[in-house]
Every structure is written in C-alpha cells, then in structure tokens.
Length: 206
Ligand SMILES: Cc1cc2nc3c(=O)[nH]c(=O)nc-3n(C[C@H](O)[C@H](O)[C@H](O)COP(=O)(O)O)c2cc1C
Image (cartoon, rainbow, N blue to C red; front, side, top):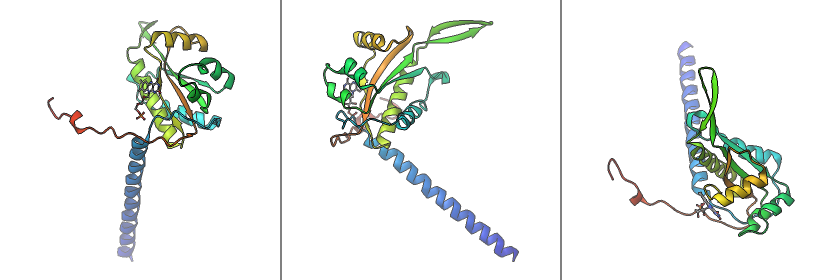
C-alpha cells in the first residue's frame, strides 16, 4: 500500500513538472512571438481605447528596467479628441494621431533627489532617457500583445519639438517628453520587418 502511494506521488509530481515545463515553453514561444511580431503601426480605425486598456499599457511600461530603480518615467495620456487635433492635427502624418485610440506621451524626470547628511538636493538623472526608452518599448510590446498597434514618434532630443510639447502639456521644468506614441486599433495590415543580421554580432572580439 505504502509503495503504491509513493509511486502515485512520484507520477503526480512528474505530471505536474511536465505540465509546468510545457507551460514554460509555450510562455517562452508567446513572449518571443510577440517581440518578433511588433511593428510600427501608423494607421488606425479611430476607435477609442478603454481606461482598462490604457492602464494595462501603462503598467507594462512601468515594468521596465530602470537605473537604481529610480523610475523616472511619467506619462501624459491624451484621449481628448480636440486636444489631439490641436497638438498634432496639422503636422506631417497628422492622421496617425487623429485616428489613434489614444496618444501617450512618455516623459522623463531629468533630475533626481539625493539625500545626504540630512539634506536633500536635486541632481541630474543621467539615465532618464534609457529608462524611459525601455518603458516605451514595453508599451509598444504590450500594444502588440493586446491586438493593438502603436508607433514611437520621436521627440527628445529635438529641441523645438520638446519645447512645443512641454508647453502644450504644461510639463514641469525638469520633465522632458521623450516619445509620442499613438496607439489604437490597426486599420491596415502592417507586417514586422526581419531585422536579423548575423554580421552585426561579434563574439569575444570585434
Ligand atoms: C527614437 C525613435 C524615433 C522614431 N520616430 C518616428 C517618427 O517620428 N515617425 C514615425 O513614423 N516613426 C518613428 N519611429 C519608428 C521607426 O521609423 C520604426 O521603428 C522603424 O522604421 C522600424 O520599423 P518597425 O518599428 O516596424 O520595426 C521612431 C522610432 C524610434 C526608436
């Protein structure tokens, strides 16, 4: 009887291990497929995103790696149609903003607080744009995973673009807009580009 119970427990643990192993493999496949399928999407149907969708996108963005875990990112979600039209309505590629489900401006705090000997001071955060770039990529990947499309449109370090967006959004002095990301339901059939170039890779020495 004891032997049978032990055998049954062994079989059970093997089965559980087998399930979690195949689960891990399919999670891996899904994650890699999502990365490989991400592409810039610039045409949208005009359907708005729900608050839940926007929160999911922002949670993914905030899951990014960040130097010293400082998390310098902040986001301005523009989902007011008239605001989108006022900000982006007459520029190049205006339609991708006007038809997006929302436009998310990824911003970064360029300074950080430092406490020393009981005194707090502000110092430059030299890693703000790396951190916020990682957050932007996470946002793009989350959009892909959610069946949405998105594109990173550049802002920083183009000074006049940054100044315009900062003033239109009323950003504090130390907050810089890094990227403007229209995100929404894709209207076209954009396909991912194959960028794999083995000649770009060097092992141990250039
Ligand atoms: C820093 C940065 C700035 C970009 N700026 C723009 C832009 O202003 N307008 C635009 O349409 N796409 C912009 N893109 C998207 C690129 O054009 C796009 O990622 C590239 O062509 C590769 O295509 P894929 O994203 O479909 O792989 C930008 C991407 C990055 C990373």
